[in-house]
Amino acid sequence: MSGIYIHIPFCKQACHYCDFHFSTVRGRQAEMVQALAKELKMRQGEWGEEEIGTIYFGGGTPSLLKPEELNRLLGTVRDYYRVAAHPEITLEANPDDLGETHLRALQQAGVNRLSIGVQSFRDEDLQLMNRAHSASEALSCLEQAQEYFDNISIDLIYGIPGLSLPQWEANLEQALAFNILHISAYALTVEPRTALKKFIEQGVVPDVDEEEAKAHFVLMTERLGQAGFLHYEFSNFGKPGYFSANNSGYWQGKHYLGIGPSAHSYDGRVRSWNVANNAKYLRAIGEGTFARSREELTLNDRYNEYIMTGLRTMWGISLEKVRSDFGMPYYDYLMAQAEKYLDRDLVYMENNSLVVGPQGKFLTDGIASDLFMVPADAAEE
Image 1 (cartoon, rainbow, N blue to C red):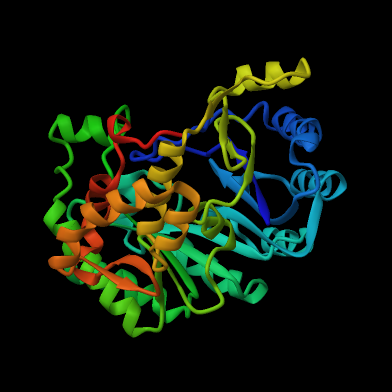
Image 2 (image 1 turned 180 degrees about the horizontal axis):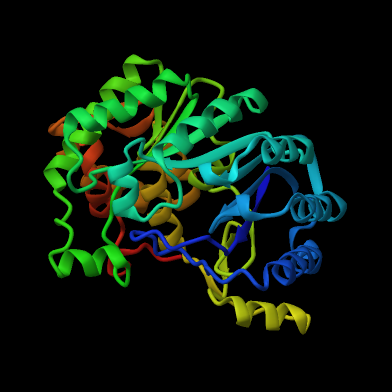
């Protein structure tokens, strides 16, 4: 089962840490929605009869869409694609956008999962990150959202400069007090060409402390585990039955179609991505063509991607899949590279899969890179 991702490239203001593609100039929003609908129609033939099980509105800030714009895009998907009887339809939203009228409109449009960018319940953190909402708006939003939606996820950020361990624990407890069923939590990352990077270089904001971020991560995994959450992917925690079907599809190598500027698509062998420029995207779609790039993944590329995504999940790396999809040279290489991590209990075997253990969680990316097959060592295809 495949998924459709629709990128809404607009925000009210720029968060200091964000390097995603977006614009704070929204004068062409209506034109953009028209182009997104047109791209959906234009690309119908690429997808054949694959059933669409998830529809995900990301960004940017999809909650800036007007109800009629959201309805138009969902209607286009239903008209031109074979959609499952009960698809997961997720919309990313900011707390300051979600009043009662908007929540009702989202529910009526068919959205059945909200991903709310809370990030923190502390005003100090929100101001440092230049978020558009306040802590009180986050609390009010969650209270109202639960009247209309059962399936709610919130985003939280840890490792924020100045965020103490007790303050981070209070953030978690506040989320748990709402009986939230899914939490996505990300370490604050200093990306190039962001305001946060500049502020740190100028000494305006302290640099991110990796040891403090690790302490936040350890506390989070312990506390959320106690609360009944399953740590099913490095940055994602869900109660049983409330994992993100959209994101799980990415990690399990399922196909997805990306619509909108900067959106990526993957059909199992070829990855393509639209230009990360609103004007160029609009011009191309207006002319009935595409401004996008593509890359055909080699067997080596696909192996490395599977290692990276699989190791980040609670299901791990299936050894049977490695043997069947990539061949014995890759299997032998993987087992040889993994031996030192098995010996140190950073990785363990379960159900014929390699799974990262509790002590290795914060080292996942480093372990994965060591299990990659470098091109010079790749088996003949």
